[in-house]
Length: 391
Image (cartoon, rainbow, N blue to C red; front, side, top):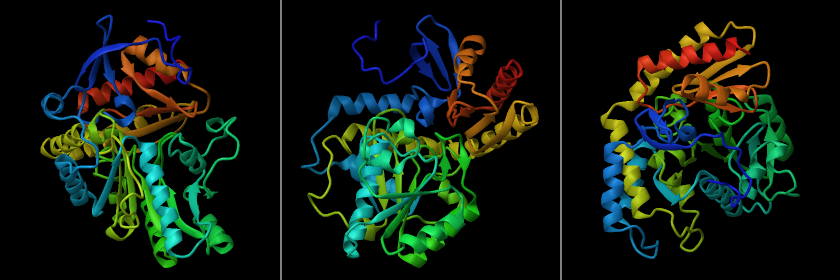
């Protein structure tokens, strides 16, 4: 079908899928593919999981929407489950990662207002990506993302990711106005750059000593991708705010901003809202996804298979001349090359039946479902090796 009636915001491959199951997808011609992308870290429990399907079907037959003018039982249940797993007491539900980050930025401004700071600043990172709304673009990096948009809203200060000296410098220059630090524990869109545990701990200590909020964007890393519910748990720290989306409902649109009780109560009735946020369908599916991950021990599987995939890639392709680095955590892995390689997405699909992503032009990004098995690990490694060898 022609795409002539769609705004030209995407450049999709000439590939259309008809159905999926687990780690596999089938195109409209009936060809099978191994999905090593999971809809960009979304379908963590696999495609068409029977329990997810059953929850969607049953809830659609009961109730889809009432609005937040009324209490929503599934919203309360999902909030409680996330509080138990994250250590953060309060949740606000919306529909996407960008909205979740907008909520976090709003909380940062309210934190500044509560401290009498007229023009609060948020420290963000070079090469970050937090969404495509105007405010989240202001917190992101990359001129191509905001070309033609003019002056972006929001007062953000960018510093190099992982550089504590730069944090000290901006503290000395702007410390009286800074209210929060916002970052991804693993920068996904810029090529899978992993913050060290020591860096995350140092950020926590720095924020504590200055009365700032530590806000973590776990939209891509959260809900088990790294082998823990949240990537910050590898560093044994507790942030003040965490944002989620992507995998929370396995493809049903949902976003969430989690916060400590003190921070979450900066909002008052009428201070924030969402027509569709926290609807019964999305929240019921979110509860189902969390239950599946727990019962099927997918955190352990993500850690185990992720470690195997990372080590096998380092062994098989890490020393190839075109490979600059192989890095990652759990089932979030990047293979950085020394040259542009966007064509590998199409070659992987057409020649090998494997779905991958290339981000920032030079990094193969792997984000398979958490249900991945060892045989599939070996298939991914073999395909990546073959693709790089032909460059």
